[in-house]
Figure 1 (cartoon, helix red, strand yellow):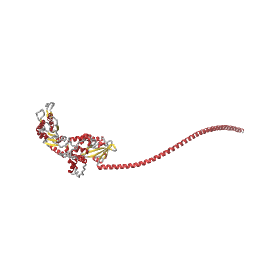
Figure 2 (cartoon, rainbow, N blue to C red; figure 1 turned 30 degrees about the vertical axis):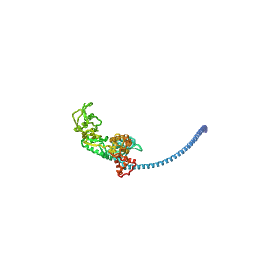
Figure 3 (cartoon, helix red, strand yellow; figure 1 turned 90 degrees about the vertical axis):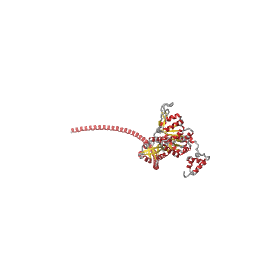
Figure 4 (cartoon, helix red, strand yellow; figure 1 turned 135 degrees about the vertical axis):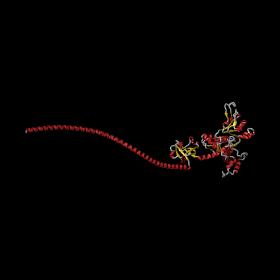
Length: 557
C-alpha cells in the first residue's frame, strides 16, 4: 500500500514536476510568444508606419497625377474642341469642294461632250469638204489622219499610230528634204511644197503640202494635203499648147512661131531666125534642133559679134599647127565639132566680109578647109543663123553678101517682141517663177496683181530676157511666197506708162477722150476696150478710175 502510496506519491511528485516543468515551459513559451507578439506588433507597427508613409507618398503622387491628369484632360478637351471645330470647318470646306468638284465634273463632262460633238462635227465637215489633213506630235509621229487622207493613201487607223510622217507617207527623198526644210522655217515664211506620190498599182498623184504649227502647241505640226493632180494634168495639156521646148506662149504670135518651128524642124534646110535682142532666138534654134532628126547629135552655138576675121575663121573652120603665131596644135573648128548636128550662128549680120565668103563656100560644098591646110574635110552640119538686124538693108548697104543671105534664108522665122504678145507675160512669169523656185529653194508660188499690172505696162525693150532678169531680181528681194510690186526692179516701177495710141498713130492729146472712144467702139465691153488700147484690163480699170470714167458693166465682160 505504502508502495502504492509511495508510487502514487512519486507519480504525483513526477506529475507535479512534469506539470511544473510544463508550466515553466508554458510560461517560457508564453513569454516567448508574448515577445514574439510584441516584436510582431512592433514590426507590424513599423510596417504600418512604413505603409502609411508609402500610402501618403502614393496619395500625394496620385493627387499630383490626378492634378496633371485633370490638366491633361482639360488640355485634351481644349484640343479636341479645337480639332472638332477645325474638322467641322474642314468638313464644311470638303463638302463645298465636293459640291464644286461635282459641278466642275458636270461642266467638264458637258464640255467633253461638247468637245466630242465639236470634234465629230469638225471631222464630219472635214470629211464632207474632203479635206486631207494630218497632225504630228513634237517627235514627228502621226497622231491623226482625216478620212480622205486615209482613203487616199490606203491607211487604216491602226497603221499610223506611233509612226513618223516620213515612214507613213511615200514621199521621195528629195521631197522629204524640202518638207523638212519648210518645217524649219518660221510659220509666216512657209510655202506649199509640190510633190509627187506614187502608189500601187501604178497610181500617181500630185500634191501641194502646206505645213502649219498647231496653235495649241507649236511643236505639233498640221499637214494639209491639196490634191492638184487634175491641175497638173491640165497644165500638161496646156503645156503642149503653150510651150514648145523652152519657148513659152499662148498668144497668137507665139502659137504661129511654134507652128513655124515645128515645120522647120521636120526639114534639114538652113534657117534664118530674126528678132529683137532678148526674144529667144537661141531658144528657137535649140527647139528646132531638139525636134529634128539631129537631136541626138551636137548642138553648137557661136556668137559672131565682136570677133575679128582671123579669130572667127579659126574658130569656125579650124586651123593647122603653125598656121599663125600661137597655133601650137591642130584645132578643129565649130563646123567639125557640130558634125552630124546643128551649128547655130548668132548675130550673123556682124560677120566680117571675108568670113562671109568662106561660110558661103562651106554651105555650098558641105566641106571645110582648116587655116594652113589645102585638103577639104567633109562635114554634115545643119546651119541655123540669127540676127537682130535687117539683113536686106545690110545687103543694100554692101555690108552683107546677098548670095549668103539667100543661102541662109531658105527657112525663116521672125520672133515677135514681147510688147506684141503681152498676154504671154503672166505665163512667162509663172514659168520663170518655177525656175527661180527650183534654183533658190524659196517658196515662190505666185505674184501679186499689182506686180503683174506693172509688168503688163512695161515696154520691155529687152523682151523676154529682160522679163526673166526682172523676175530673178524680184525673187531675190522677195520675202514669202508671193512676189510684190515693191520687189520688182526700179526701172520697171519708175518707167513711164507706154503710149496708148495704136502703132503708127500719133499719141492723143486728150487721154480721156481716147478712153471714151475705145469704150464706145467696144460697146462698153472693157475687155475689148483694153484690147483696142493695147493695155491690160487692170490698167484700163486703174486709168478709168483716175480719169473719173465710170461706165456701166457690160454683160459680156
